[in-house]
Image (cartoon, rainbow, N blue to C red; front, side, top):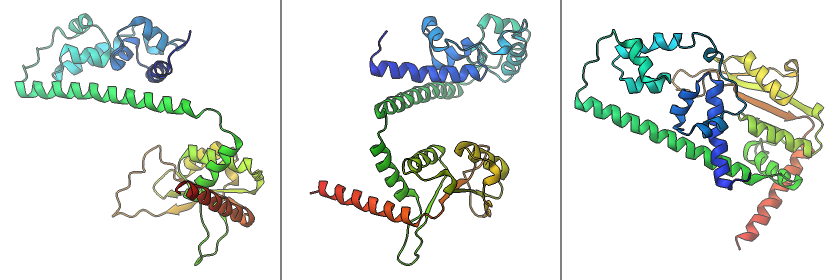
Length: 286
């Protein structure tokens, strides 16, 4: 069965979100409500091959929901809100909270605010769906990358992110620092295309002192495929109490520093390649 490119990308993006929610432990009803999918056939296709979470298999699968519903009701939640949050039927909710007092009627202003919030949440979900659709479609446009395309991409990437020789600071080293795993992988693929031996690569981590240094080293070692014991001494960045850092949390792993030993000749060629690319681009400007 064939699909129009845009339609196929829409479906794949929606399936990715559905699978992510399923693996996070959500029920079919919860996924349906979160993604606003009312068609059971479509929902079956989105979740094809994905087993139900363990909690839905238990004989008393609704135990947790039965305990949660009264808590939400006591907070003033309506049946509609509880249904969306828990993914269960209104009849079940009614049964579980029937002995609780009915929440006080909210004033019109508060009701309007809640309605506006619900509309905004729906709008955000639609925007996110469109965002994912555009990204998926753009990704499909790339297709296979030729050696020349990788070569040119690597030269531009190094000149944008790598260390460069300066008239006042003569350092013809091939040194690359980055925190993006995708950038790291592309850069290493480029070095392999240039026949740079793996043994010539030296790695170390640059990270703030408040982070989990050992976890970061293990992450980067796994990404580049080397033993963490081969890493050089970590560069620790001291924390400035006057600075409000946003690169914190479990996802913060600092930067990976990569140096090619005996790289002076390679650096000179990189600079020459870059000059050639600039000269060719200039001819297009007329």
